[in-house]
Structures are given as structure tokens and as C-alpha cells.
Length: 246
Image 1 (cartoon, rainbow, N blue to C red):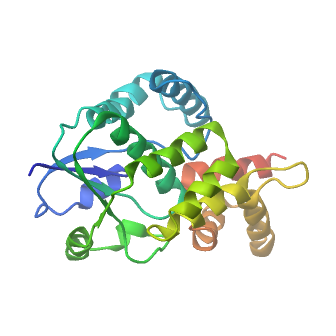
Image 2 (image 1 turned 90 degrees about the vertical axis):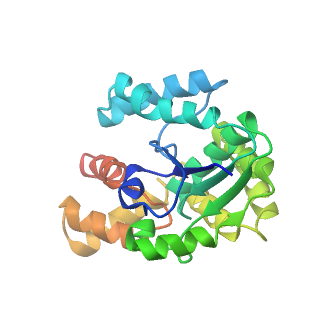
């Protein structure tokens, strides 16, 4: 049976064991960050291209050639194949995972789909594993038999329907307990009139404790304390700059 591996990021692609056969596709997005509300995939990609070009200076052209193209490949995976989804437990990875499940639910049929993830959640994820360890977790991949429910997580997230998101997560808790943790982290980061959200509060506390406005040590400490978010330096730097600039 032909196998496809969908990886969350190019870093994993670079360390991917050559002993594991199959076609490799890469998710190059940070759907956890920025606007995602849209009525179609085409509109979503335009919304994302606009946001990323403004927030991170990623050109619209590069977004379409490097990110959208990979999603198009996911849409065109043939039926009756094995698909391995390599995603971690943090919110960054989970939102991308939910979106990929949505695409697979929409565009594939009769595929055997598996989730491959580190057995223990750490700030380092796949990066902490050597090739032998990656081979081991591949062999222990968990079969996904409820793709439609996982896909509905993306629909709820995209609409901003937090109650529905929580309910779906609770329904999946027995099989995928880590999903509820990621959802809770998402709830905690939603700003209110008197609360800027958990990531910003954590950054403020770290900056106060370390008595510094230097980004590198703050980012390192944030990754240790708030690894559930899985934010990269770009996401944390954006929040950090908002704090520093008032």
C-alpha cells in the first residue's frame, strides 16, 4: 500500500529517517496565529496570505508556492492509501492537524490514516528524537477511525465557536486526551476586557522575573513554561514586541 507522510514543518522533514518509505508532504502554516474565518478554502488562503505578509513579511507569492501548493497535494492524495500524520500535542501543531484532517475528510476516501506523535510532550517535540526513536513512534502510530470528528474541530476553530470546540474535544477525550489540553490552552489565550490572555500574561511575568527586555532569554523561558502553545520565535516575538511597545 502506498504511503503518504504529512509532516508539520520542514524541520521534521530534514531529520526524517530514510528507512521510512513514502511520499512526504509538509504543512507550512501557523493557523494558530491570525485570522482564519472564511467561507471557502480559496478565501482562507487569501486571508492567510494577507495576514502573513503583513505580520511576518512573507510574500503572497511565496505563501502560494510553498504553502498552498502543499495543501493542494494533500487534496489530491489518491484513495485507498496509507496516510501518516506527524503532529505533536501543542496548540500550534494541533490546529494544523485539525485542518489537515478537514482536508482529508473532504477530499479522500477509503484511506488508512494514522497519527504519529511523540509519546511524551516536551518543548522540543520531534526535534528531541533521534532517527531510531522516530522509527519507533512510526511503528506505534494510532489508527484514526473518527476523521469526521477531528475535521469538525477545524470547523469550530475557524468559526470561533468555543463551546462547540470544547464539546468535540470532550467527545474525543478517551482516544485523544491531549486535544482537550490544547483546546484549554486556546481558551486561555482569548483576550477579555481585563485579561490580555495567558501567553501575554506569561511573557509579562517572565520579563518581570528575569528583569529583562531581551528577547532571547524570555523566549527560552516561555517555551519551557508554556510548551502547550508550541509557538515559534516569530509568534512569541510578535507578542513580546506588543508588550515592549506598550
